Image 1 (cartoon, helix red, strand yellow):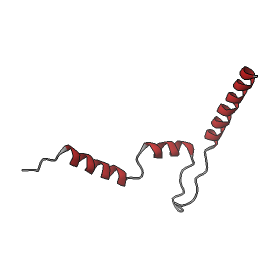
Image 2: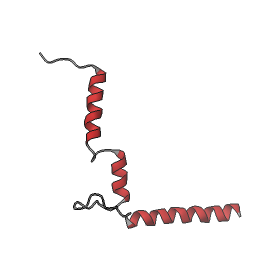
Image 3: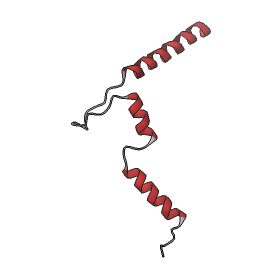
Image 4: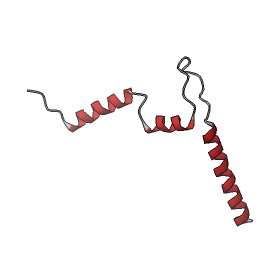
Length: 73
């Protein structure tokens, strides 16, 4: 008969399994949206930001600056 596990044991095993898998997680998903794909031949190389992400940031910051300039000035 299989041994019954406590909730804390199952949670610890699940957390250990998920933390061992670096390809999963919200942080990884956000980084994949912001940066170019990693270089498989040089994993330590820096990832450059995607052009679309940089453009979106520039548009948001410039819109905020225009809004503040005309409403606070």
